[in-house]
Length: 395
Image 1 (cartoon, rainbow, N blue to C red):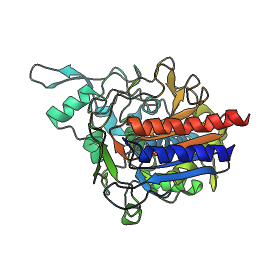
Image 2: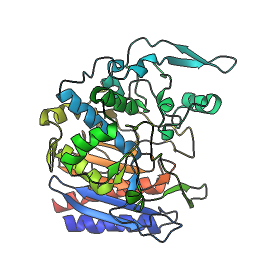
Image 3: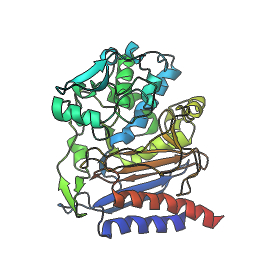
């Protein structure tokens, strides 16, 4: 079965780097509860350099960072130091100063009011806290364009001091909520988020090459960022997140390898157990993976800034909820992913899934903007589908 899958996965990876349009390079891996049974790399790290993509290449992980930040918060819940339903300002006071924006007046000034209730860490984890991103929100994009609101990629405190778009708890909107969860973790521990990760997550998992602060050792294996042009061609860029960030951005700031991320995925497959120790208790994993959105649903992400994101949605037409760290597909997905499985993505077209029922997970990594790139996303879907097809054929 695994031999069939390996052959199919190799065809997918080789296909996306040789097609027209193409992806510059890709790393993809799949794991069961014991370890990786597929590791593949194809193409180049950068199209303007003669460097092949390798399985140990380093990627800007973008929003695949979020689940790791959520895990750090869950550890604090286990320790009795974090109450998910207490006001988040208890731990991160700055969040208590933010108001709700109701639009703009005739002079173009924001119309602000106090929120009806205080935002909680549970709401931040489920993206119901009220925060958005400028590339998915017309309101935030206007604040950036007209009022100089810094982008989250600046990794600055000013970047997260945005107004709420609605009262906490009233709807799902994807945004900088998890950056604030990082601030909650720092407020409780008195340590920078990267230090918390290193001690309480990376060391128990055996993760060696993951950091908020990119260094020369990792930069030597860095996969370059590319932009997809209107004609389908690709242009390599020198984009990097700040290597000395003012804030460790819990929503998107990590760099790392796919192999190290697979260790994190395996921890979720193994009820919180890492290769060097327990990261979460089994009962915490069981609690966290459930739907915490209630009757609300995950919605399509509108591409407000076309250079950063297309309109994007996993499995359009299917119901999707949110756990504490992950999206949940409420119905069986076309790939074969069963109902109740977990997954999410990162802005530069990185995608992963965690199927705890079958003990399988996978990760697909490219470095292409805008998000929702048709070539990379289709390749990822084909990669995931190849696994479930191999299972059916073996049965």
